[in-house]
Structure formats: C-alpha cells, structure tokens
Image 1 (tube, rainbow, N blue to C red):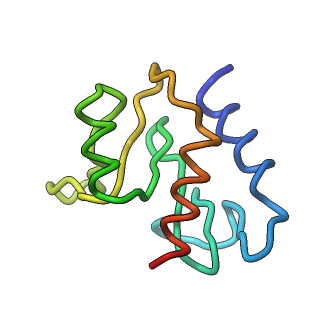
Image 2: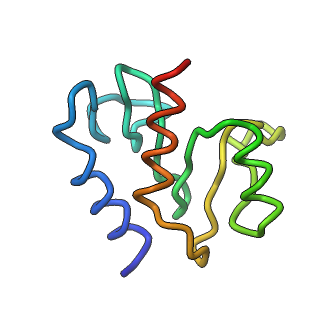
Length: 106
C-alpha cells in the first residue's frame, strides 16, 4: 500500500469521531491535516505522515531510525513534530492515536 493510500485509511479511521475534522476542511498550512477540536494531530506532507507527539516520544522515534523531526521549510526542525519514514514498521493508526491523545491534553 502506498503512503497516500495508508493516509486515506487513517483518515477514514479517524473521521467521524467527535471533534475530528478531516483534511480539506481548511486551507493553507495544515490543509492535509486531521484535526481534533481545531488542533492538528496528523497530516500528510511531502509523501510522509507527520505527527504531533511529545518531544520525548519524537526523540525516541528519531533515535530508533523511524523518522526525522518535521521541518515546515523554515529551516528549523520542530521539536514536537515527527515526519515518519515511509519504511518504518511503526503502525500509523497507533501513532496517530498517540498524537490525538497528546493534542487533546494540551
């Protein structure tokens, strides 16, 4: 399954839950994002799943070779955003669930 198809499956899984807004509901930055109560928790950017996770979790995943800190083309990688490597065996649904939970706590 391609990364695009995997993201579509993820969108289908999360859309319909209370407070979740699917991609395409907004424009500009985050137009490819899943949002919880207006806050982005997962998005598809440049062919990768990008997730908002606690800094320590991002550190762990980066150190494990599962991705890199997301850079929104501003030259500075973001501490709480992970761009998941497309070859990572990490389950997208579980990571998106972690991201949703994290965004809900903030």
